[in-house]
Image: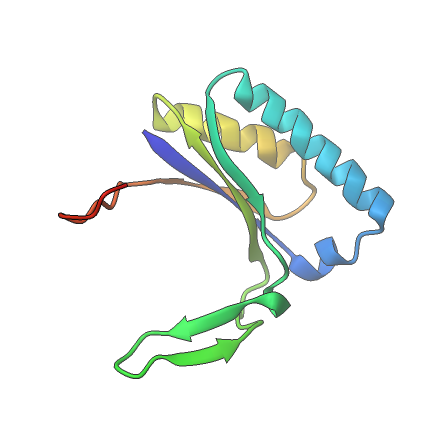
Amino acid sequence: MLYALLCYNNEAAVCGLSPEEDAKMMAGVRRAEEKILARGKFGPRLRLMPTTAATFVKAGKDPLVIDGPFAETKEQLLGFWILECDSLEDAIEAGKHLAREREYGGIEVRPISAYNPPGVQD
């Protein structure tokens, strides 16, 4: 089964890191990824640009386009990993590896269900 591991963190704190601090943080992430890679299959892993670079299309009959940032939470989605795991427990263990490498924020583990509408080819 596929799982998304979603990285939530304080965007202002992360964007405020010096290049050296960011490199140290990302080295920790890579160490965690190596542990996960040894146990499972990795799909895409992406670091998102800041919310200030985002655009939001609000649902409705006449969709409204809004420039970011728009999240009113203490933590923002900053990136994600896609993993193929045998069980939820395996995905949670991968999330723990990533969570150990951060001082704040967290990792949301969410199963992914395939969305394959009839008549649409991959």
